[in-house]
Length: 299
Image (cartoon, rainbow, N blue to C red; front, top):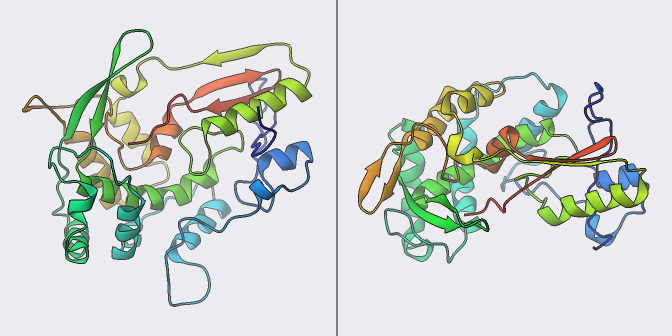
């Protein structure tokens, strides 16, 4: 396993001591801070990937949100939707997978790109007026290694754009809340990073035990009221919360039949961070714990 791109946070796990939070944005990765490794080319500092173009000098609106979240871990953000701008919607469109399967609308990435600016202006207006309506996700079934099948929801392309944009805004807050050893569904972190950190822990630390836990059928059994309640710990903008509720209540289409989803989340749901905050696999080694993603979480 590669020694590169190690992202490892240390600290006590479940011995009654809260793990020390590792820096999420610094000139050195959490692995380098803990292990004392020299700065490598692969881990050099990167600019904020969520910064949107601005004619003004100084920090962008999203960076100010992130700084406020960093300064006050209990702050509830009551004005966030204005950050979902046409520029951010455009950026979200171009960040989508170009060859991804279409949702119930049948619209592909390439087709949506025709007259893109007019589409984005219309979408932006509907989101801010409250007239945007989420479409059902198209349900498909993915085979699992044990022979069972896992339901997967494919969102309509317009919904993907809005979800990605809202997720970008919310990531500014939740990325400051996460601990350094958390890897599940986080921007710039992957399963490989988590496994590398685990390898470092096993090789360089005194290990007496390894604990691997996962929550069974999490996506199928996720309780919507609890999810919204968790979101509202930090998100006080009711317009953003209503968008999330629209995605939860949009339901799924399967074989031409609409089905209500009273529990579970089979769509991308706007942000991977929302899912990661509620669910991760925990791998404990000795006195250290890492949260590892158990699927790619990509659509």
